[in-house]
Image 1 (cartoon, rainbow, N blue to C red):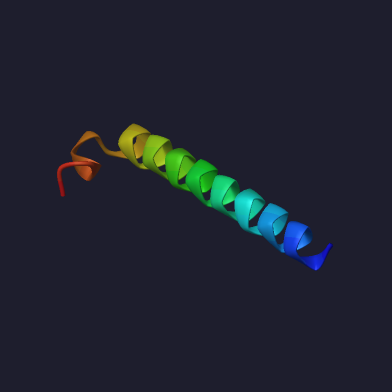
Image 2 (cartoon, rainbow, N blue to C red):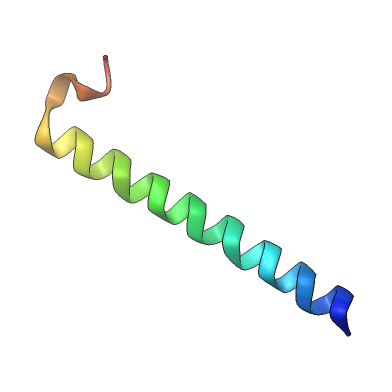
Length: 38
């Protein structure tokens, strides 16, 4: 059971990380067009 729980936590944390990175990129690009170039 602990193996399954650990796998789920890893999966969720990876999805959250990807989600926040995506949000961060959207915010940065909205604040400054040259933010993605820098």
